[in-house]
Image 1 (cartoon, helix red, strand yellow):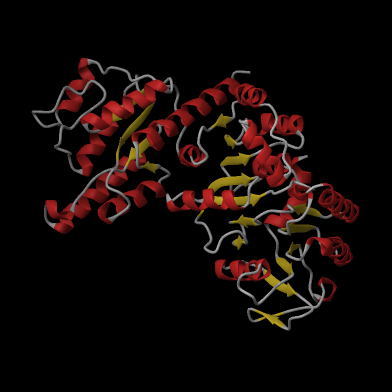
Image 2: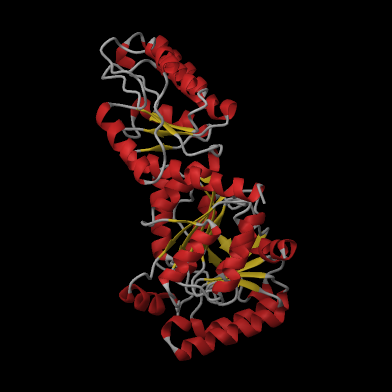
Length: 474
């Protein structure tokens, strides 16, 4: 199955050439976006616009039919009215095309007539061996070949694969994640799942070397049993984080009219998540916060967390961790003595949390404290502030050098001790803080803006670590 799904879907996610059927020079049309976006993103293949009414689209030669494209094409993007899609599929079969992305709406989500048309398209595609995304979706992004069809500005390449049953809302979530600095390997707007369903995408991302964590926004499942069967195998290798809409009757009705999805019993779904170990989020964006930690940090050996921060911050972080079932161990006298030498005289005893009491040390000193704590047997993971520096605190060159040295020591700790670090940035992504964030993120250390986000991220690491240890013990 793994080899089959890779061979079947690589023409879609790693194409060497694409044809855009319905290409247009009118900026408000999908046919325009499907040419413009991959051009701007630097798609590493060839783009062939197709439209019998155009000679050129965005400066590229345009062909009257996909049958007229002179060179081999791996994948086509379909942006023509729904009644024309069956013939486009027939033409693609004649050209030997093996993959497609159908962004066109007007199929099963509209009622029985649309469902019949969708069934016809599926029948034609399967007879000709074409796998296709959609219909009624917002296309895809694949970092593997810089193929961006879903966004006006391509995401930063990263290790999160995102499967979304909603096109517009999924794009919104992806762009919010991008604004937080998270990178994507794939974005897949699955739409009606007419020919490829969520289980297929899950199986593909399990084999994708660019993807380390999988995020899903789902409204319902076409084949729930098959999805969970595949998820059971995938989660042994990669974490799966999911937000499922449709918990209420009102949301379930909306899902049916949106993507022709049957939401199903939420209690059954919750039970399956717990049984499999899928991490279910209460809010849609929480999935990305958790995934960002999982793609870059080692899994903790247990659930004991050390917290370094200010007084109020430490209180809120401690409570958030405790509410999620994590322990905040009390440090012994030996550990306290080692930490105390780096703290101001007026600072409280560093039993955990550790509070520098308004006298934050420089980045090197903070990193030495962090290293002491990482070496404690009673600590499995650490939540701490981002290393700080301000050019006004001393000579600029000296301050910058100290900050960079400290950040490099700081960022090496997870790898050397095998324990994750999650950071809080309460100064925002500006000025010197942006430099520190970039250093941390280049080392895979996530940066968040609230104590609750930090706690959720650490809890995701703890939960998936526990799951993987369970698999290892089987």
